Length: 369
Image (tube, rainbow, N blue to C red; front, side):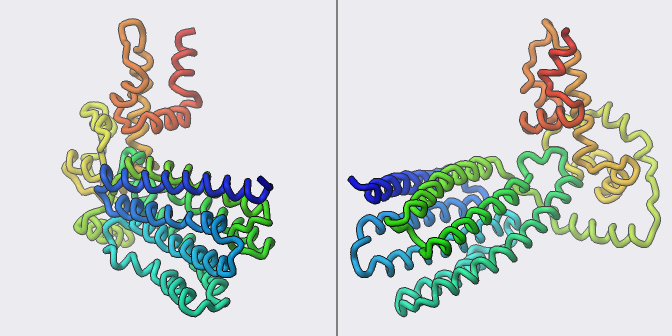
């Protein structure tokens, strides 16, 4: 077996593995985790993406045939169609329930039209035109989503006491990583003067093999995130109320309502922070006040976001429980994180270390020395 055949067989094996992994993840999501639109869209795109790896089998089966370049180019255009599918998923994730599926399909329509146009015309200009369009659209889309995720994160900080199940910052990082990978693929393809796997170019085949493994890892990572991901949106009344109060705040000076004089004592006494589903709206209802006034008070008087304000109470509670941890107290660190109000053990560890400069385990070790 020569070197070319070995690399092609290796690529086909990894491609088959990738197809099985993506299809399996997609079916698992559809069967067990399809509560939200973005979960269903992601499952569909994963299954669609799995078909894109057939182009590596085409390299093996048709590499010596006269129409192999046409088939490869057609399947590369299919890859761009998948990019449109991932754009659909990103929009449904960042803007849950805002768009219907038929509206999201518009993002993939240009690539589908280009694929059909190339299939019937075989014009050599279709592929570079699609490449330029996808590059420009991806840059615009990346900037737009990054700004939207920042706005979403700010809303969470102002309204949610524990971000773990609502946080979308991971998706922003992921979008950047995928863009970099696609850019590397583009530069590598230009330097090799080919947009698809070629047996005579070893680096091209090795890059595609690495891309398959990368896709499996990213697919599993995103699936794990989406299983736990929840949607947090303000109701229409809350959004209208927030807008009205922001307009009022811009013209009137802030006044401290009497109820907030003992807010810290109320939090200690009632222990609202131990509710791991606590939001700004729920706390405002407990206090019998307006959510926007409460938000203004925490921001302007406490100089904190709602998220930081609530988590400070949770961390102090966790430290109190750790101080009492001994032979008579057998609660684990996971139990303490739950008792303190944290929805996630990982968030508890990260927040504890950020505030106290050491992990809970390190704190316990130092305390018992």
